[in-house]
Amino acid sequence: MSSRPLTLVLGTLALLVSAPSIAGAAPTRQSKADVAARFAHEGGVSPEFLARARTIPHWTFQYTDPTNGVTYPITMAGGDPRAGNRTTSIHTVIVPLRMNFVAGNQDTSAFDDAGYAGYRAIPLNHTFNGATRAQDVLDSPVFSTGFATPPDMGGDTAQVGDAFVRAQWSKLNTGYHLGLVNDTVFPAQTIDVPATKGLAYQRPVGSWRELHGYGATDTVTGFAEYGWFSNRVQNLINSLHISSTTVPIVLTDNVLLYEGHDAYRNCCVLGYHGAAVGASNGMGSQPVQTYIFSAWSAPGSYAGFLADYTNPNRQAPDPTRGVADIHSLTHELSEFLDDPFVNNVVQPWRAATAPQYGCSDLLETGDPVVGVWFPYDGNTAQSPPGTTYYGQYHPEDEAFAQWFGRGGIEPVLGPSWDRRLTFMGPRTIAIGGAWAAFGTYAHSC
Image 1 (cartoon, one colour):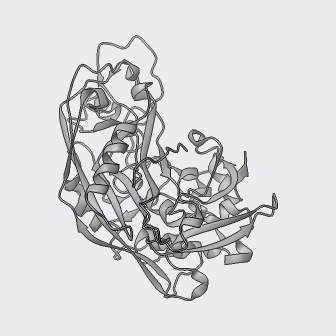
Image 2: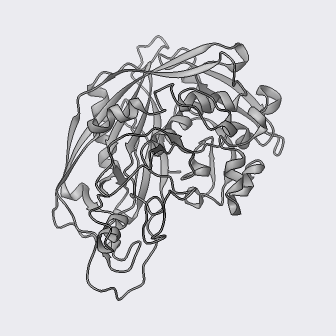
Image 3: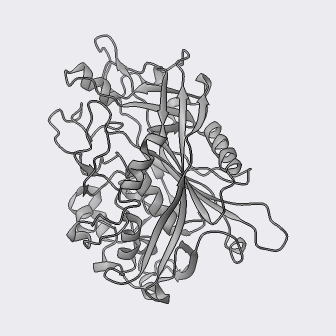
């Protein structure tokens, strides 16, 4: 995972996606792989700054990894499950972004033949308004308590983040809860994206579907430069004077980020979370701001969700290609709950299912299982033309803290519900191949 230093009071979150394009002349070249979805984090706050900080509710523990003998301190959001079955609330605000992109002769040749031979990315003038997705998020399992996880995942009727934490600490059917309370939705905050800092374009899936007679398919995606966007969002959060005891969720409608001078192909983070220390008052009670950035993801932004060039007969998303609706947000939410201050270092791990992360030493629950999802029925959000959510939400699977701890966390906090190592448990393992490895603890680098 990439990490960026913080230079302002607040950090930012980012989410990057690959670039699509529209079909050109008859293909003469071979197709090339589209970029992989990934997520990131920013900032990080050392534990010594947290003792008297003004920030979200949190608790700490430490464990010793039996495979290397090292003791690791861990800080998590909410209340200590060892302290009884109590409810803890974390307050949030939603900050939607209205992002205006312009076609300005951007060189998109890096996208030529991405996904399928003949694909071309054509820059577009387009506006993406995250405000149109704020209520969709509030109605989803992220905030609603009216959804139950599948029976084989515990059948827990709770917000999805709460269900994740309750399963992780074997607190199903108890009074232990960690819930989100959204205080307000800010008016859409407008960001004009210069042609030198981003572009909008039709992704390969939508382009292929239109070319092959599936009708108009809107997979248009915004693509902003990471550093430029990060600074804008940092400044925006500061200007809104959001309390450090509240978590801003910066929301876009399918706007992603690329990074560095390698331009658009150096990409594809779909969301991130972060933390930063604010200005101290000299009394040791400085604010520590945590935050989340995510896009509501449009179906078809990545191949494998709709019928496309990987499977023209697809009738449901691939088990490992669930990037749509709340997939990105649930990834970041669960990582925030288990690592709110981006300081939970563990023995380095590597997952064959997520090679884009290389060797990581952070307890980031969503990264090893990126793309894997489970269904919640009842998604009635309006979908872009030519796309569908299949009537479901597509939250991401998560690796439990016990997976990272390699057997060291259970003596301190106990095993998860039914001793599984991911939220989906046997569902993850049943995918087969490299996914079967989640029946055991993390592998070292």
